[in-house]
Image (cartoon, rainbow, N blue to C red; front, side):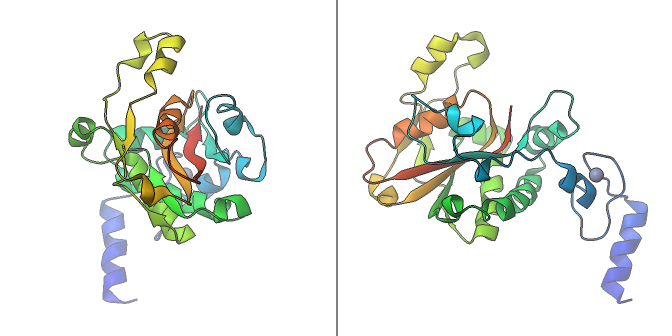
Length: 230
Ligand SMILES: [Zn+2]
């Protein structure tokens, strides 16, 4: 046993690292989630299914080539803790790890393998300052690393902070999506297949707002990936 490995194993003994989902101790090489839980994650398989429920959310609202989500965000499911820890507990690296696992699924689909550029849904600068990081950017980094794609975190920007959506009616929310996001240089997205990345898809209105912002980009194809779908 070499000395580095000895110390790593020693550290594991005094600071046990546990799986966020099942609470069992992690093995060397595992981070945040154990291999068993990763294989049990309720995957949607939407990347291999055209006209899937994620794509249907955009029908009649926005032009989406393909849409998918890595796993189902079910009530009471132990896997919800992954999103919670990623978004609210500062565990940004968890996004990258889950993005890497999801990427190997996406590469099974020619539609997703043909993406040119991965674009995380941006946070408003105030929110970014508050949280310290953009969780969607970390998911996007994991995806980009395994899929060998470019990532762009500059060109799409959030212009308006989210009005507290819980208090608004569906109609108002729909009205609100236009003008929330903006594209700085449309030419950078021209003739590209862009994959927008977000943490959880609920109504799809945030992503719809991003797509609206890109409506004047010439010859753009937009696909969508979210870590989870509610
Ligand atoms: Zn586990």
